[in-house]
Amino acid sequence: MTRQSFIAVAKSESIPERGLSCHLVGEIAVVICRIKDEYFALENRCSHALSTFDEGRIRGYRILCPMHGAAFDIRDGSAVSLPAKTAIRTFPVRVIDGMVEVGLPDIHGG
Image (cartoon, rainbow, N blue to C red; front, side, top):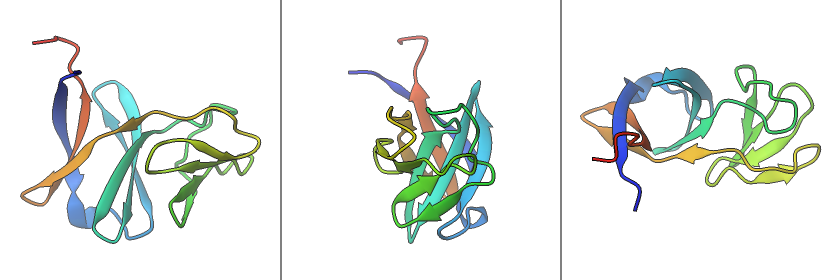
């Protein structure tokens, strides 16, 4: 089992409902989405044209790439519409004392 290192990223109330917030977590660009009281974290890079989701939109549980309209399921990163065919990475999220934390693989293994 891969160990996770959770990193505090943002206050939970700063992530807009049905919106997104982009952050650098460690060395990985991450987009955090919130729907109701659920938070999701995905790598901030479309697998189709490698653009970011900074100006993207949330529709249901899908994030739409602003460049060509590719859509991904924010729950598992799967590509759900063309032109994207490849999933993007997702990361575990937790909220502790009002802070959104994103889990990255522990590169130290310990």
